[in-house]
Image (cartoon, helix red, strand yellow):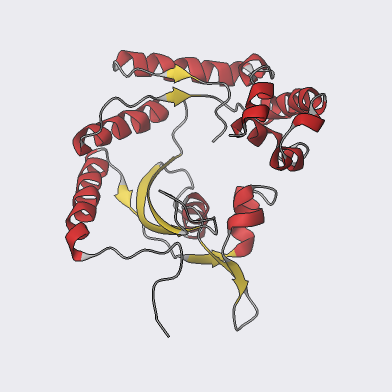
Length: 256
């Protein structure tokens, strides 16, 4: 029997380790320069945490999580992203009460996707979180920091796209308008989009299927449904980026 790595899980061999170390060291130095502190959270969390935080009808929870029952009967999952675990840790250890927090994490995350070029079942993320800081300035800070990271790593000719999903009121009104629009073309949507139509309609905007793309190009824009505070936040973000000469483009079809 030939023993080899599980499909979608890859080794990092010594010849490549220097690249990983460079990425980690460069990122850590930049994050700490901006006042972000490292947090390390478990690879395994309660499955319910991700269902509550990410959403039971999302692709991550429905199809992509590595979730199972351990020997003690606990329902647990390999983390598919960092944010839910960071929030859990912050609440559990009292880090958010009347405090501002800037934290970062790095490490492997897991999703049961079909392995293909550039997409693996174990992959690695750098994650940055800021809490307790109102207004668009912290968004400007995060984007500016990321732009500096790309520059330090040698990336060029990148395109920054922005959108706003607004607050709960905005999302409720827009969701209704989007469903009403998509139902007119339901028979022409791809199968995944049909499944998402009533459960997660914004993801239909993200479809890569050409026929669905041709439909959603005429869909209502969420920018037309933004409440006053959300519109002001987006305007403030764009102004802050312009003040820093960071080129950006608004894309109302961007949903994640």
